[in-house]
Amino acid sequence: MNKILRKLVASVSVLAILSVASFTAFAATDTKNPSDVENLKGTAQSGAVALTWNAATDDTAVTGYQVHYGLKSVGASGESYDMKKDAGDMLEYEVTGLENGTEYFFSVVAYDAAGNESLRWAKEISSIPSADAVDVLDKESPKVSAAESMNIEQVKVVFSEAIVLPVKDPKDAFTIENDDTLSLLEVLDAKLDIKDPANKTVILDTKPQEDAVLYKLTVSVDIKDNAKNPIVSGASDPAIFEGSILEKPLEDVVAPVIVSAESVDSTHLLIELDKTVVLALDPSTNFEITDKDNATVTLTVLGVELVKNKDGLADAAINITTSPQAEALYVVKVVDLKDAFGNVIAEENANVEFAGFSGTPTDVPDTTPPADVLKLLNKVTFKNQKYQVTFNWENPEENMGDTVKQLLYLSYNLGETYNVNSTLLSEADQYAIDGLEPGEYWVKLTQVDEAGNESAGTLTKIVLAETGPGMVGIIALSLGLGRLYSKRKQ
Image (tube, rainbow, N blue to C red):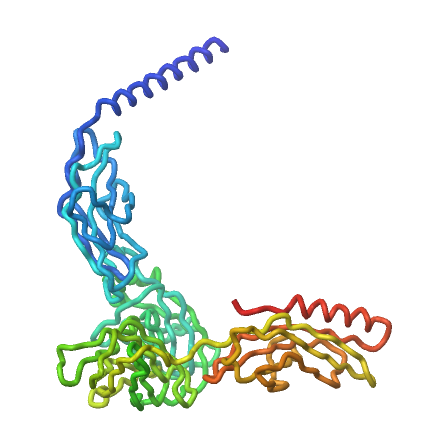
């Protein structure tokens, strides 16, 4: 038996040596390059470009393809692209991690097992990723991720990806039935949720639901994703939700109104509105800025940020970064800008003028809170059966001239909620709280600037013991915990 085993091992070894020798000889003799890659095509995606090409040929076999790409066109001898990706033995590849609105250049070469590559790159193409693009390589069907009752007459349905509703009677794509009796709950309307710019959420209007009854939602194949993949009805779409009897809130049917548009500096424009608005997935599409006297002269929208308006209403003002303005009169056209209820600014009210500013950028709206204090410590004393806690801290140098006040908050429920205990001057670096009962307190100190921006706050915790021998130890623990829980916002 041992002789047979030794012979078998010897045979396998010989075969392995011969295989290696054969491969080495093959690699040494294969010097022919694969053919050039032809018919390279690219389709813009959101943050990506999908590439396809025809198969190359080789005297042995093409084993893979390399995708070359970058921000510069490559034409001269000796030049190369910035990036390279191995697509493997595939005739399509999606280059991801790209910036929307930026032009990229692409080429592809084939290679064989011996490492020989195409003599020339495929004919170069260019493509610009876009947030509105359709993913042509998307072969996966959408699914229902969740369904829940919002109130007695509305149901929210969330999908695994962006979906497209049928143009005609979208409500017919949804069926809801009582999971116990199988009786139908009529769906009156279906629309995309304006609050979800990703288009994954649909709001259904229904006949009144029954409280605490379980309903089963089914979606038909009329629901598709952006790549036109239909949902797999009956397999990927069922969802169970519990009925509600909460009253449906009254709908807001009033469109937002532009209060003002004013140039802040040579590259910033501030638009004030009377109510909160929702930007498009690509906010730059919501605004067009042209010279009033020459419509061919435009300003490029480089950035859009929602901020508070002058009344302190969140997301009711828009800070727009523009290309450099001239001393001219401009018109900004607001395009398809909606509030949270889907009310669109009327076209006749969507144009507003503002004077361009050619000076140096200075007064950009301040949306950055001050820095938090350092080393928030506390000292505990006991007097007349009550505690006094004295806090001290270091104010950051960068807050000088920025912070206008400090707010000291106190929490009696382990940090779940805080109440303002004191408003302090901006330069204050200590404060004492008198008359505290035994117990555990959480303290937060924040900084507030002139624009109303408030820092996240520095935290500390104090534990005040009942009177007795343990008081001294608890006071020492409080001092230590003050240091432990102090933190600065990163």
